[in-house]
Image (tube, rainbow, N blue to C red; front, side, top):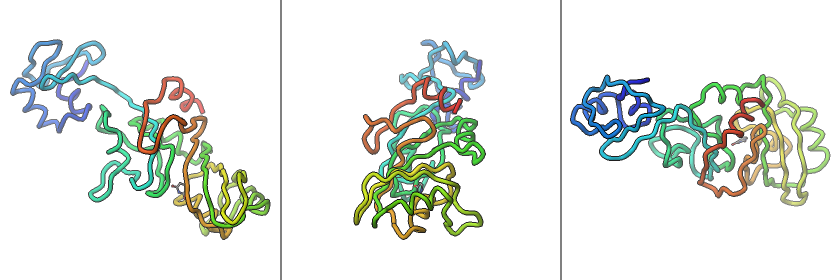
Length: 236
Ligand code: URA
C-alpha cells in the first residue's frame, strides 16, 4: 500500500506539491472514482490510477537496454546536450539513470535502470564484469598489441590497465578489433589503444557481462529487458 501522491511522484508525474494540487482539484481517479486526498492509500499492485484520464501504471524497478547513438551524453540531465534518458520516451519512473558511462561519441549497449543495487554490482571493480567493445582504429594492430594488452598496458594512471583480451578482426592501415576489459576507467579503451599508437576512430560497446547488445536494435532505440536477462545480470 502507498499514498496516491507518492505513487504519481514515483512515476514522474510532477513534484510532490504539483501532484497534491492535481489530486485536490479532482484530476486523479482510483478504480474509476475521483480521489481528492493526497494521503489516500492505494494498493499499487492491483488498483488502477489515472491522471486527467490517462492511466498511469506503477513500476518499482525498470530496466532498459539502449543502443546509445553517438552525440548523446550518458547523464540524466543536461542543459545543452541530449541525454540517454531523453531517448527513453515511455519510461515510467523518474529516478532512472545509466549504468556507467559511454563517451559522447561512443555507441552501443547501455543499461538504463533505477536498480541501484544491480548497477553497483555491475560497476564494482571487484566484480570484474566483462565489457566488450568493437573498435575501428588507425594503424595495423598485431600480436604485439595482443600481448601488451594481456600483460596490462600503461595508460598513464598509477597502475597499468588490467589484463585485457584483444581479438583482431581485421588488420591493415585501419584495423578492426574486439576488446574485452573488466574495468571502467575514464576513456579506458581509447587510452589503451592510444598507448599503442593506434587511435580509436569508432567505438561501440557490444556486451556487458552476459548481456549482448540486441542485434535487432538500431542506434537510438531501446527495449525493455526480459526477466531472464535481469536475473542473469543479477547472478553474473
Ligand atoms: N572506453 C572509452 O574510451 N570510451 C567509452 O565510451 C567506453 C570505454
